[in-house]
Length: 427
Image (cartoon, rainbow, N blue to C red; front, side, top):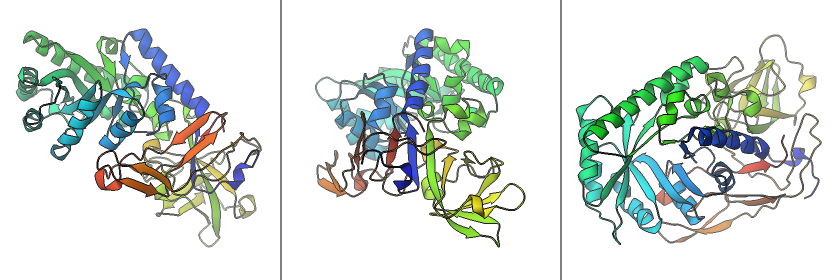
């Protein structure tokens, strides 16, 4: 309904400022264009068409995903040049093959000879080849073959020499930047990762192998070093939204965070000196535990409050010191929470029937939103028609959000339902 107030929204609800999203995306895109490095944005933070279009500048090309459900969703909506940046699961090789034979360019990632053998056992049709990135562990300690192990070079050679397979590039994630505090520490980790990747590229060159190189993490790509200009690609993702964690690391300021979670006060507990909110860990996640003086997140405009703890559907808030003045927080009071980690932030209820935006006065609105519930979709893997009450198509001004549910839960357990209200003109 046009002109309805934001207080009509059902909470908890995640809201996104599109203008900040556009600003973040444009800044990242311009920076790497100047350095002559291809930006391949990661989609896992938002999983939406709208943000995907913004991050790719409307090209719908050259993206990274972390699940095959995401890959299928973007492929269904005209995206190409998709990199599935997850060590190839043996039970999903056929699904990868379907996408590789369907798209102009679908790329996979591996870090073990057994995975290479699985690809060789499933040759692609129509003279297509598997486009493979070697996942290199540059002391991040997650997936990847360790850069210092002789097997890393041997595996790269095996990929490049295999029939029906092409070594497209070397891929490293500098996730250890998430332990940094400030630009100096970020630069140190970025320098280490970049140096190790470039050294490995020299090893490949020495044995006659030429391919791309890519590293990524939002901190390293937001605070890059000059040597990163020697890379072929970078693959950050969280920068589209940013969050409190990124501001603590030094990737951004709080003014760059595009997401908020709205929650209501639903209870007073004077005997505990606490407020009870309708926002629990299923909406906000527990990632901020023990990392902020304000608890699990930041309650915007209330620096004196701490989000002390959360259960699945409830949050407990207490003052940093002194006694709560309950007259300031009557039941139904709307609080704005800046999440610690945007990737883990979810919406657990219906977005709401009205499109609005909020600000300091909570009196500004946008024009219109229409919610289509119980949407029908076809699973891109089993072909069955499914119906879900948690899928929405929303329209408000020129923004449209389509829930990325192209695969049924039977075929991908990684996809989480997200109901996001995009705000056209800010909070």
